[in-house]
Length: 160
Image 1 (cartoon, helix red, strand yellow):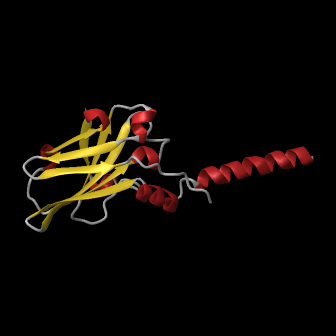
Image 2 (cartoon, rainbow, N blue to C red):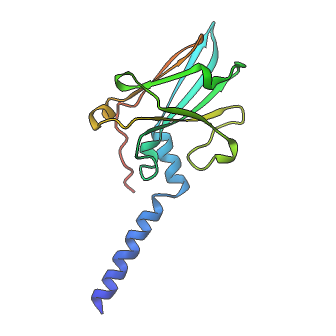
Image 3 (cartoon, rainbow, N blue to C red):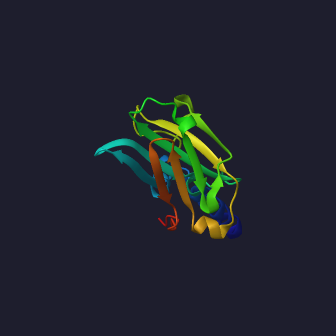
């Protein structure tokens, strides 16, 4: 009887730990830890602010087959951003695809911080562990400027 009670306790503790890792506040904290911010300033005025989030660190169960980034762009420029942005990561590897994330697709991870921003999902080929530890995302916006996002320092798993 003691063995059955022990097994039940063990199973319920494991399920509790698994469920806690997907709470919205845990995902929000992982998103903040995996995000980097950059801006382009021209003539003393900020023309573009971009927040890049490395999604493989936020939810590795979903984002694990490639290198995924969520890009939030705030800009007063009236240009079709998706056609002006070029992304690359470590070793100058270019992105496979990019798509704009519609407002009705937003969830706890894929969302923007204000109503004027646009969100984009970007995928790269999977890279090896060494390159992941030295990963930098580069964004070139035609005729506007360039931004670099440094993901080289490690984000440690939360220990509650």
